[in-house]
Structures are given as structure tokens and as C-alpha cells.
Length: 346
Image (spheres, rainbow, N blue to C red):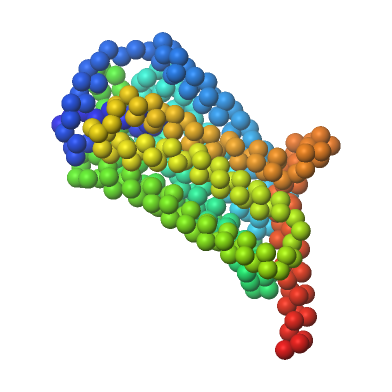
């Protein structure tokens, strides 16, 4: 059995029987401490910043959307997104400790859990973005139906379904995650030796189910929205669409490098190991950054520049999320009136 090195933040080492290589040589190299490497120290600092900003920022969003604002379909979406990011950020100290010590000290269960939470965050975020995009599309394309059918209870049911799907797609982490003891050190790895080609299946299912297919659905939804708004021009405010566009673009930019290097790693013998190592570490850190960027997008994309200096941080975030609901409501009301007037001429 060969010992394959995997430089992913969570997947620092991976067993894989599919690729018989000389990767054992990498494991035999002398191990240097993280604090002796400048890139490693920089990544630790970046992850600490991500943890602090993400934990506090998403905590504020949860407080506002869950307790300060009136319950609505839109706050249900944003609250669920914030909860997903908050849970992920809460587990980051374990990963940061692992990077600093270069040894896993938290046991097998937490080894599985931290990886599981990372992918739970990835899948729940993209699935919720799909749900929000579909909600916007239906609201614009079928305003009268949406006004009658968009309820908090139904939105909550859709959120639960999205979480169930996210948990299902994240289960490979609980199955294949394992601890190993090379050179007397404890490391947290992916052990893909139980099922042949399982590494490829997991990597491609995550790429297709958590990235490609959702983005195709989102693109279709936004194409319908743009065409519909161009035809009737019923809504003047573009803030909610700017917020959603920013959230989707940020997710795409943050997660694309990670998926690229994960797929390249499947044929790591064709590429430079050093480049894959650095790429996977940086790609994972960039993916982590997505969890703290969302709260700031709610603020800065939801209000005009001048208003940022006239209101508190809490008011900015509440206005950003509240504007979304108010704009959709105005659109639905205008569309209903328009359809009612049109029906008198038939």
C-alpha cells in the first residue's frame, strides 16, 4: 500500500490504491515545524482572520435575521446561510491547531467531523443559493402565484430539504476520514483503500453535485430573471439582485480553485507535487474565506456608500436583507395589479 500525500487543508494525507507511485518518498522526508515555514505561518494568520471575522460576522447576521427582523421568506434564506457559515467557522480553531502543530490531537471522531462540516458548508451554501435563485425566478416569472404561495412554512421546509441533501453529500467524509500514525505522529487523512476508485467517485460527485450542476441551474434562473425584467421593467431597485449576484460570484471564485486542484490531484503523477501541495493549501484557504465574506456582502452591497456612514453596522445589515424582501414584495404587488388590469381587457 502506497502512502499518497494530499496537501488539502483537511486532507493533509490520503491513502489511495488506485495510483501506485513513489509518493512514499515524500513521507520519508524530514518533517519541519510549521513556524519554520513562512507560507505556513501566513496561511495560519489568514485562517485566524477568517475565523474571527466569520464567527463574529455570521453571529451578527444570525442575531439580526433570527431575532431582530420580522420573519419572512427572505430572512429564512439568509439565516440558514449564516448558520451554515457560522458552524463552519466554529470548527476552524481545530484546523488552525492542526496546521500549527502538524499533528492531529483531537481524535478520530473530530477528524471525521471537521471534514464533514467543511463539505456540509460547501453543499448547504450552494444548495441555498440555488433555492434563492429559483425563488427569485419564480417571483419574477409568476408574480401572482408567488405572492399567494411564498410562505415562511414552505420556505422552512425547502431549507430543511436543502440541509438533508447537504448532509447526504457530505457523508463520504464520515466514511473515508481516518487517522494514521506515520513517523510516530498522528495525522488526519482520507483512507480510500476500502473501495476501489472511491477517491475519483467522491471528488467528481463533489465537483458535479456541489459546483457544476447548481451553477447551471443558477444561470438558467438568472437568465429568466433578466429577460423578464427587461420586458416589463417593473422593479426600479436592483439591490437584491446585486446582493445575490455578489454571493454567487463570491462562491464561484472561492471554490473553483479548490475543485480544480482536487481534480488535478486524481492524476497527481502527471503534475509537480510541490505545485499541487501549494495549490491545495491555498485553494482550501480561499474556499474557507467564502464563509466570512457573505456577511460583508449583505452590508456593502445592500446600501449606498453614503448610508454606510449614517447608520450603525447592525442597521446596515438589517437594511441590506430587508431591502431584498421589500423589493420582491413591491414587484409582486405591481405585477398583481398589472395582471388584474390586463385581465379586464380579455
